[in-house]
Image 1 (cartoon, rainbow, N blue to C red):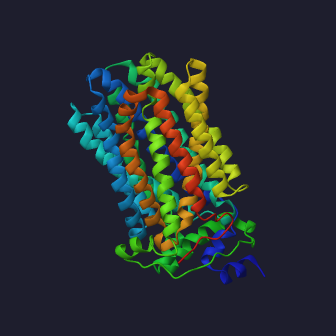
Image 2: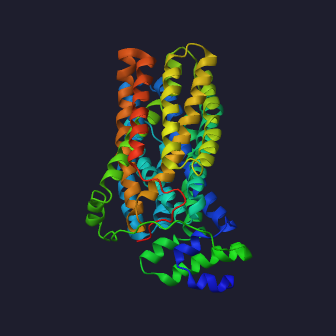
Image 3: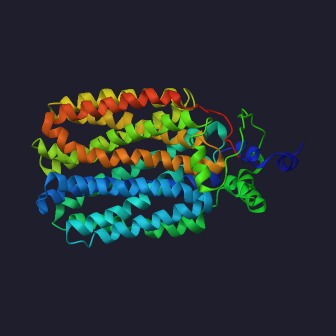
Length: 451
């Protein structure tokens, strides 16, 4: 049987799953990854901006905490709404819209003259950011061949380290240069507004979503572009068939109800718990690290320098998780990285020397961001195509509740017991997440459920 005949006889999901990694996959991955990196740059920038504005505007701890938390209020809403919209209107269109919203709001933040205006704009930044991340991971997962799907999503998440490193560089070289350094940092964060145009017209819509919506000709045309990109390399690759329980309903209310149906309730509860705990510890720690270092006696430039070095350890963390996730599977990889995060957090909180702070911080970056990569890989796999973005978005939204609470709790915990108590609390959350991981379904090498 020729390749052409095999392609015709196979279903659309089968055709996607047996593709090799092609130039079109690279385009989808890098196009989505650049949006992801720009997201990370914005989230990372705020940690440096907070440290600078606390001095320049003479802000109280609860005021700086709200600068961080108000964005996460927007992210919680954005993640939940974005997933619903992506299941209704498509992955690519919603992805582009989210980039536009947060890019414009970030650029406008450079012009604010007071705290209230900054808080309002940070809320809108959060709306865009919160919606973008689960939509992007869903989008890439629906193009990725089953045998390398987890690895590609971890690589997508690795773009977060690129963006956070860019934020650390801006924080180190731009923000301390003048009183308006933080304004220039926000101005650079407006780049996603322009990038949204490329996303909207330069990337294809998800073929699985098009197929699920009955737009078969469009779906087939998208798959053909991937097959043409592969050329003669297309071959039949064995993929484990997944069980296909009854299809999820198409209305918003019924999709939300299905998340808690008998089939999905355990994985939904465990997934939300993992997202909640990881968000609490990650954002509680990394948003506040520059400010915590300043409070321990390091000047602004040195604390930013330490943070830059710590951030660089994210990349090998992602690389290791990307390899292990297709070797060990989703659950074991994620739980190991979460336990490593817990141990690193305890050591960081008790480190007393510069070398200890940097080493423990790098370990925390390595394990925590590797865990994030695995979490984003496993999340879209928990649900069928008709429910995938909704399930991913609501899991992320549940997690964002923790990211709202965590920055507000940091000043309280620091006042009660200092950095050691704070990071022990973070460690406990990491351990709870590591246990909850085992309630998820491990779909390594299995085809996505395309109902």
